Length: 281
View 1 (cartoon, rainbow, N blue to C red):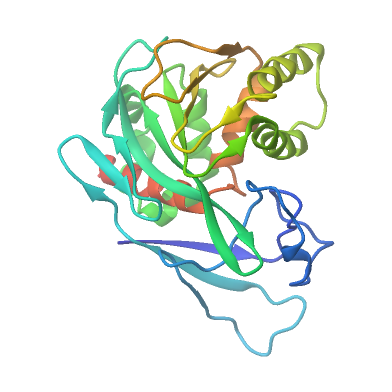
View 2: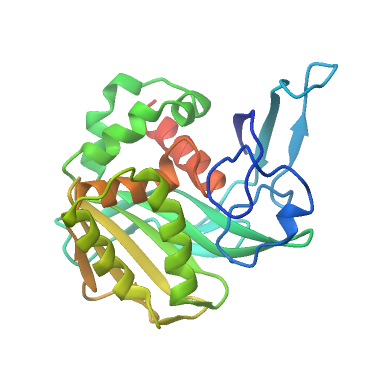
């Protein structure tokens, strides 16, 4: 078991992937239809326990803890418990100079009315050499690591391979998938250079009018801060690269979507923090 703590002082906007101060009604959260929109609803594998200081008012901050089931493991795979998706403990990808090791996994969820529906599972893989560059965080707890954005920034800035594997657990058309990514990336890029616009256009073209069936693998692989490869496969691990995105702004914005202060999959970031704490003992 692992426990991850967080503080919410503003409500979550159902039409975006970041906190919003303008939407706070329960009815708002039932209007959206994008299967990749952020949800923090309760589900069978996690629970939220509120422990506010009374009396509550508009300025009160609510603290909660998320408790998630431990992954199921065997010699070759780790199973993400909420989706039952199996992730290789180690794998090799096109364009990578060495094998990558799994640090943690989680899931992404959408809410239909009051029912949470899993959309995909995700796992972060890294070149093990990255861990040797994180000695400053040795001995830190998973909660301390999860709250320290500088550690996750250090992982991104390291000129070593790291890859996010996304495994769809339901059918999603490519346009819907891209629209959700774009909605998450855009607020993280205040201005866009011609290089950024070209990179986003390349990124968009990979998914437009492309059906993404249940079981599809999507790999977002950062070779260095300014270069990210995209691989999509509906038949196991990919054998080739579909596109290369050459923009540090776009690459970091996407990384921040998953490992920044407002991650779209809190369970993924919490699991990666636990994996880092274990490796940095």
